[in-house]
Amino acid sequence: MGPDTRRIWLSTYPSPVGTLLLGAHDDHLCLCDWANRTLRQRVDRRLERAFSARLTEGQHPLLAEARAQLDEYFSGQRRDFDLPLRTAGTAFQSDVWATLAGISYGEVRTYRQLAESLDQPAAVRAVASAIGANALSIFLPCHRVIGSSGKLTGYAGGLDAKRRLLALESVSVA
Image 1 (spheres, rainbow, N blue to C red):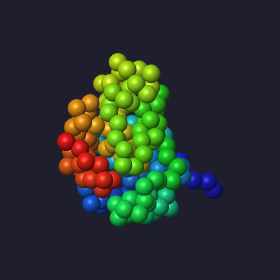
Image 2: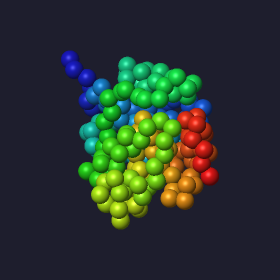
Image 3: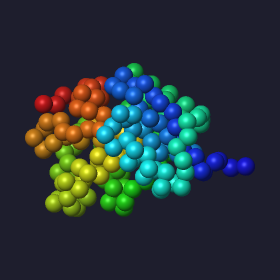
Image 4: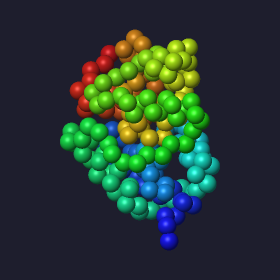
């Protein structure tokens, strides 16, 4: 019997910057998001609809691997993640999330730079909205996106978490 595609296996991860929810569906990580984020239920329902699956607390080998890789990241031993990821969003959101994946450890980009890299320089707000819908925080590093002024701007995990993640990567921001 193959994997149970009717479930998104869910567990928590107590990171040094806040509690994360991890989710695995059909041998892909589909969720690494802040447990206390404002839009928690909206993100969860979007995943359930996209994968025709229900969030269910439980164990999955990919969740254990995600925790191990996060442990390495937070201890400074890992810069890149190598888990299979699955996103759930519009084509535009998927394009934005793919650009997030291209931002290297220790680097930052502005929302404007991301919009320009998508050949949509006027879409800064749409880019910001897509980043806000990212359900794979840290793995798709939305914490590496800052305002055009060089200052920290919105982050689902809170600005303190964003600041601490960037400090972990030796990035200093205003």
